[in-house]
Image 1 (cartoon, rainbow, N blue to C red):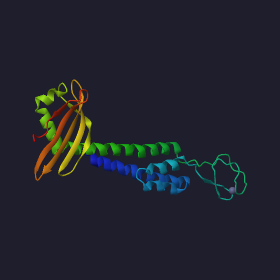
Image 2 (tube, rainbow, N blue to C red; image 1 turned 135 degrees about the horizontal axis):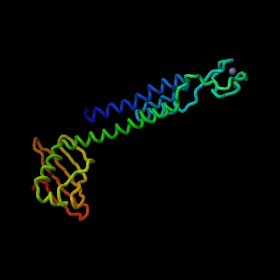
Image 3 (cartoon, rainbow, N blue to C red; image 1 turned 90 degrees about the vertical axis):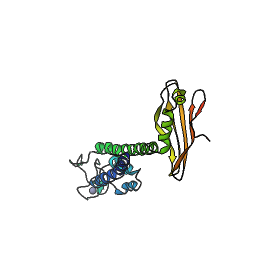
Image 4 (cartoon, rainbow, N blue to C red; image 1 turned 180 degrees about the horizontal axis):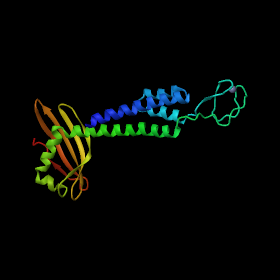
Length: 214
Ligand SMILES: [Zn+2]
């Protein structure tokens, strides 16, 4: 499965799972279902479900049928005495629903955001500029020795790319130190040019320039 599919799926789970579970729970507990309007916002969908899970179950007075607190001893409406515990035996498990609310929402959103960024990083790594940059780095003795041995890129890649312009930067680690690779490329018709390909040494501040010769 690709990361874009995973991010779409987790996004939908984060949005609709709390809504469906919350509406169902609100109905069973006779809690105001308006709390589920939080679900209008995909990032806040789980909040409504969490509130409903934390709300007190409502029960009816056996005498006057008014909605009352399940632990009330006296009905506030008709003053009749109530049995000691009027919790129905099949009352929803609030602890379980609280856990579910805290798992489905925030966890799915975290996964969505993570896979979204991995997705962008993967797309950046597919660009001409990224591939060509590594090609030059790997074929340059100077670049290989610049940070004291084989360079390894960090998994985080920053940047932006359009059909005719790419700018990327990312951290690299060498045997002797760390640095940063800065890439800027543009395309004219079908030909890409590497306007900028710099490796910066974080410690010494030295720069190695592998850009196209002007
Ligand atoms: Zn009553």
